[in-house]
Image 1 (cartoon, rainbow, N blue to C red):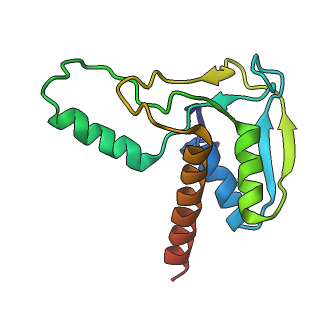
Image 2: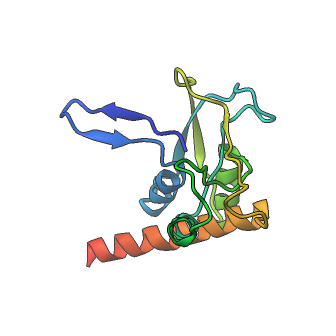
Length: 153
């Protein structure tokens, strides 16, 4: 995930690197548009590829790391081991919800890396890309719906 912190005029800091959360919230708020920053990255489809990871899997991984006395390193990559194009994420979500997003193609952000994928040797060797991405999107959609219902009482 790209962590791109910027300051708003008010001085607040926000994170615009939470792509899945952003598009799901746009859908739930009936804003069927999504900004994509560049389509000429050095990837197979020109869009950014990211190693999306389920938060529950990260939690389980951390617990395993804390309880496993055999691993004696300070730095371990935690990822699925495969990149998924942000345009693929949009298309999969569109299939789930039965609606289309309007793509707002913006200029590529300075310094943005086209593809970021972790080495999954310590994480999980049995992840299947399509099933995993579907799981992440479904769980994210359910979670964001829950947060909105909780906020609205």
